[in-house]
Amino acid sequence: MEAVLYVGTLALGAISSVFSGQNPLNLYFSTPNITAELGPLISGTILLPDDTRWVNATARWQEHAAPSYRAIVEVATEKDIQETIRFANLHSIPFLALGGGHGMTNTLAKLKGGLAISTRRMKTVELRKDGTTAKLGPGWKSGELLHALDAIGKRTVTGYCECTGLAGVMLGGGHGVLQGEYGLIADNLVEARLVIGDGSVLTVSEQTNADLFWALRGGGHNFGIVSEFVHKVYDKKVDDRWTVASFIYSEDKLEDVFSTFNALEDHSHPAELTYQTSIVRLPDFDPNNAIISLSIVYDGPPDQAEPYVKLFREKEHIFSQEQVGKYTQLGVMTSLYDGGPFCRPFGAIHVGPISLYTYNATAMREAYSIFNKVTAEDTFARSFMLIESYSMQAVQAVPEENTAVIDRAYNILVGNFIIHPIAFAEADARGREYSHRIRDALFIGSGMKGDPPVYVNYASGLETENQIYGEGWRVEKLKKLKKKYDPKGLFNFYNPIS
Image (spheres, rainbow, N blue to C red):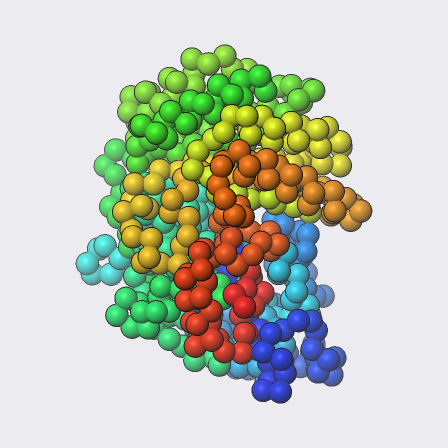
C-alpha cells in the first residue's frame, strides 16, 4: 500500500524559505481571482469548493491531518503545471500535487488554503520504438497503467495496491509484486521531465542532471513535479496465469506462520513470489480475537506456486481460497483493486511503520497482543497490521549507492494502521501511542540499533530524516541537492529534507 505525489510551495523573495503556515498575504487574494487570472492561461480545469465534484476530487485514503485547498487545478499539460506554479509564486499560494490521494504523512497537514495540482488528466502512454520503454504521463494510478500496458502486450512494476498514484509511489522507491523480477518502480525510471520551483522544466536522467536523477529515485517528493517520464516496460508473459492462495488462521498459529516465513526468506523466496499478511479483526471468523490473514501471490501457474502454497495449506486454518487469473485480475483476487475495501477512505489513520530483515516470533506475539487489546475497543476496531514480504532479487541487484532509496536490504514492510473515525479527534493521541508501541515492540525484537528504519512512502511524519532517508552521507547529499535545486525550500510538504 503505498503512497503520494510530489509537493511544493512558492513564496516571494522576502518570504521565509520554509513555509510554516498560511501566508498573511493570502488573506488579500480572493478565490474567484484564481479562475479569472489562471483560467485563461491553462487548458485544464479549475474546481472551487462549491463545485459538485469537490468532495470526490479531494477524497483521501487517510482523512486525518489532511491538506486544505482553496481550489483544485486539474492540469492537462506540462505548460499547465508551469503556469500554475508561476501563478502560485506570484500570489504566494502554497500547493500540493495530487494523484492517487494515498499520502498519509502528517506533514501534509501543513498545507492550508493551498492549490491542489491534480495530474489525474495526464494519462498518456506512448510505447517507444525500442519496445523496452514507454513515455508516460504522471496521472496514472497503478491499476490503470497495469491495464493500459496489458492492452499493448506489456507490463511493468506498479504499486501493489491499484489505487495508488504511480508517480508518487515511484518517487519514494516503489514496491510491487514484480519487483523481484524487474526491481523497484524507481529502478525502472529512465528519464523524467521535472517542473521545479521557478516554473522551468529540467530533463533528468543518468546523462542529464545525474545528481538530481539520483535524488529523484527515493527522495523525489522534495524537488519538483514530474510532468512526464520514460519507464522500462517488459513483454507480457505468454502464460499470463497468476496464482493467489489465501488463508485465515486463528491467533494461536501466529508463531508457526511467521517461523515458516523466516525459513522461506532464508532459503527459497523466488523472484515471482510475494506474501501479504494482515492482522485484523474479522468477527465472522473469530468474535473475540484478531485473526491472521495471508495471501500468497505468485507470478505463474498453480503447479509452480504449489511448493510455497503447500507449506501454508498444511497448517490448520479456518478459511482458504485458491484462485488463478490473469495479471489484470490480480487486484480483484487480492481485494486491492481501485474502489475495493482497501481503497476507500478509512478515517483517521495513525501509522507506526518499520522495515525488517526477518521476523522475531516473540516480538510478533507482543505486537499482536498490543494490537488485539486496542482493537477490542469499537473506536479502533477497523485497524489492521499490514505486513508485506517482497522478493528482492532484482532490487538488490542495484547497488545501494546508485539511488536515494534506502530500503533495499529490507524485504519486509510493516505498517501498523491504527484507525478510528475522523470525528473522534480525542482518540488521536491514543492511536499514535498504540501504533508506536507496536512498532517499538518489533524494533526491539529485530536487534537493530539506532532508530527504526522506515520506508518513506509509509512514514507518519514524526520520523527523523535519517530514518526515512538513510545514513549520514545520504542525508547530507540530499541536503546539498535540496539547496541546489530547491534553494528556497519550496517543496516541503511531504516528509521534507531540511
